[in-house]
Length: 271
Image (cartoon, rainbow, N blue to C red; front, top):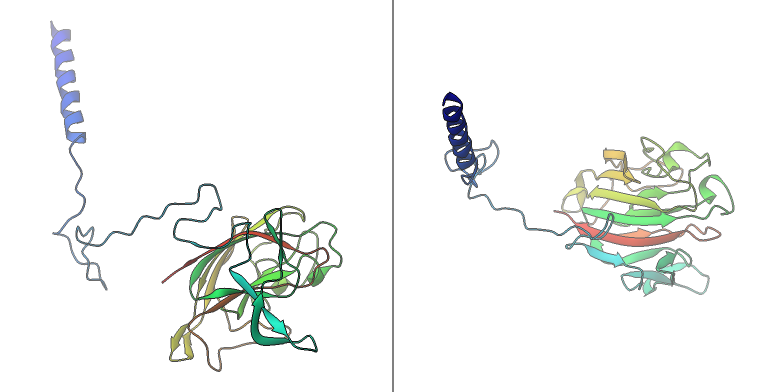
C-alpha cells in the first residue's frame, strides 16, 4: 500500500513539473532597467528584432542578403580599365577580361574592380594557386583584395615559400603580418572571410581609421586590426588627404604563371 501511494505521488509530481515546463516563456519584459547608453530596457519586449537571413546552403555559400559577385557563371559584376596607346591604364572603364573556366575565374588580364561601391562589409572569396607556379616570394601565387580600392588584404602562396612578414597571406600589405600562416598547400582551395570596417569621416577627412578582421581557412589571422592608411609598396602610409565614403573592391592580377584562380565571391554591406 505504501509503495502504491509513493508511486501516485511521484506521478503527480512529474505531471506538475511537466505542466510548469510546458508554460510559455515570456518573449520580453517591460519592467526592467534601461541599458546604459541605450533607449532600450534589458530584454525589452518592444525592441525591434533583427530580420531573418538564410545562411548559404553549404559552408561558404552566400547568405540570402549577400551581393553575389561571382557564382561561377559570369564576370558581369566586374570591370577593368581601358588602356591608352602606350598600354597605361586610363580612367575609362572596360569589360572584365578575365575568363571563366570550369566555374572559376582565371586572374589574367590586369586588375579588375567591382561595378558597385562598398564601405564596411563582410567579404568572402576562395582562391587557388598552382603547385608549379613560377617564381618565389612575392612572385608565387600573388594576388590581393583591395577594399575601397585602397586597403589590401594580401593573397599569396606562403606554403614553404619564405617572404617578408607583412607580405604574407592574410597580411595588411606593408603594415601588419598575420598572426599565423594559415595557408594550405598550393593546388588546394583557400578561403578568405573578411570583415572590413571603413574609416569614419568628417567631410572627406578621416577621423577614425579603418579596421579589418580576417579569417584564412577558418583561422583568425587579423583581429580588428587597425589599418594605418592606404597600403603601399616599400613605403609608410597615413590618412593625410581626402578620402571617399565608399569605393570599389579591386581584385589584383599580379601576373602569375599560371594564373591564380578565384571562385565563390560574395559580399554583405554592413552598417
